[in-house]
Amino acid sequence: MRHVLAVAQHGSIARAAEALNIAQPSLSRSLARVERELNTPLFNRTTQGSELTDLGRLVAERASRVLAATQSLLRDAQLARGGDAPELRIGIGPSLHGAFSKSLLGRLVEAHPTLRLHVDYAVRTSLVEKLLARELDVVLCASDDDVMKADVVLTEVFRSQALLVAAPHHPLATISDIQPGALAQYAVAGPPMPNFAISKVLGLANDEVVATYTATDWEPLVMLATAGKAVLLAPYLTVQPHLLSGALVRLDRRIDFNVSFVVACTRPASYSPLVAKVVQYAQAAAAEAAGPR
Image (cartoon, rainbow, N blue to C red; front, side):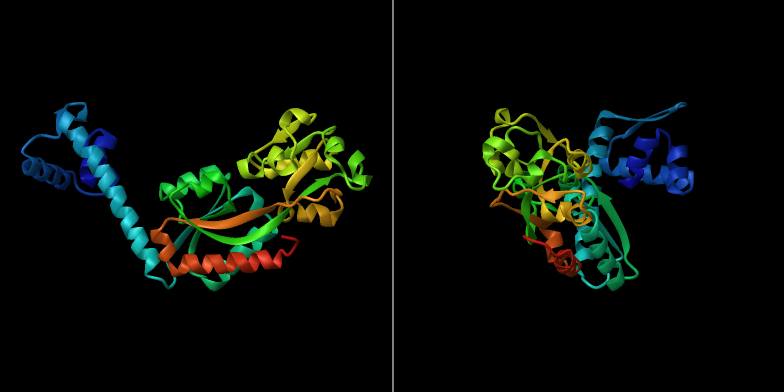
């Protein structure tokens, strides 16, 4: 089936044989054997190359799905065997960049020095899509509706307290016990997460606030906040370095909301000892990046 797909992809037996690194006569014999078994030609052969017949397209489509399922099965078996798997593909969401990510990856490579590690930094929705497509083995991110509704296994690693922060020169920075009316007079920035929406967490409708800014990455939101252009709603873990450096200060407005951070994986991968270790390393990394939760 791989040979059929190669010819379909490259458009000729010669180019497919070169890509597969096999002799052209061997590839021709392989294709002829498949066609004999199906009792029908799969390709229309011309001087310009080889084109799939209608049945050939059907065979190629099904072969592609079968080969993908086979690769997934082999990957699941590899993870479930335990020990030092040769490769791990891990996705990390925007909220977990920085100290947490550095600590997590440091622990992982120290405990598994021969591991081939691929790290994908991306927005949560993209990471979950890649996880479901089996392009990633495990994802660490903030939990929200898109993660909770996906067909994945979730393990909560830690929670981080939500804070309102702003630049030291922001008008609200010196105000005690900030009320909703005062907060509504200034722009507020935050992530586009339904469970962490500004209106839900702060009890303010979007039309009550001067302006709201959202982004799929924290960097532009932090930039707006440090420039004094917006109040920022964020998990403590995300803004911790900016609070420690003095670039941001915590506003006097209590928020009874914690952001849950999870390890997400497919059900087969959840049986993997290596994935279980990733959960342990993530918990240790969260403790090292200690702060209110």
